[in-house]
Image (cartoon, rainbow, N blue to C red):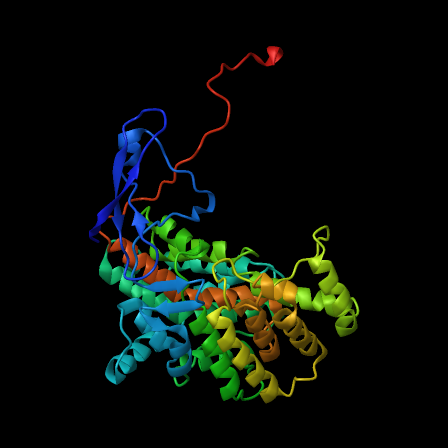
Length: 436
């Protein structure tokens, strides 16, 4: 990281001495003003709720240009990765910086495949939950609980520990998600199969039963694999920042990833695809496609509490590049399963058409986002709405680990400690209880 020749000068109208602040240039994206010495030299903090203008780290993993609608993993456009690579190739890219050649891919796939089973004791841990517990409540406990089973990979400062923890998490997340699903519906757990690919194995653990042979559908496997790729990383979002902040204390990798799972549960983050499907089901219950005009009218009414879920994005001010890819997959899956005439899907496509043509939505750039389409695809595949966020967590695990490893390897990293603008009471004395 080399500062540019240009500096930013901070001056004060009260006559305090001005100071020069170094400016760093990234390979792409906005320049960054280095304010690390601001407090030491001026006694002042910056104020940035939500960290909308603050770079918390330097990173070479993922880049987003929201205005262009561009998403790059290690420099590769998401469109190319989702079209030409599978999820484990993408995992290799995020973890190690490069796409694998055939020999490296074979070795990596074998390594992950050999770690898909979980300790048998995890079954008893899982049985402590109610059957109707939300899968994300279960996943937060299970992922955090992994650190109780794998003592040989809990030192976050040991590169070998981080490496094996990464492989274990990537390998075991599908098993844990499938176990939480099977537990919720009262079916027996299905063990991983090493003869199946990563995503096919997940589908098998989700939908197979001991009663009959389960045949994986290639179209559905490809669709789920694409969902995994599109959600694998997304720069310094809330859950990734949570993993970094949690990991900065030196806690073990499993605990840091469990913190990411907990953050992802929020409806404004990973729960967005669940919220989008719930919105469609609400419209369907209240009259379906015949009432869509009334729903749109309420969305446009600023005095209404009706919200349009699955449209627009905080970062992308253009069409979400992941949404374009997911839209293709959505139509492939609906056609493969003969669901084009399903009332809920017809409703979703009608809503999509309005959002892409109505001036109100177009002018506000409220395009359908990846959550809108991925929710439809997952429902078509047979995944319950409550499990959507757990599948998001499964996919995002590799991104969290890559970001965590990058932070630990950065010589400038410190334990995270945000500052505040204090607006509470100044120092005061405690009165005896009778005088309060």
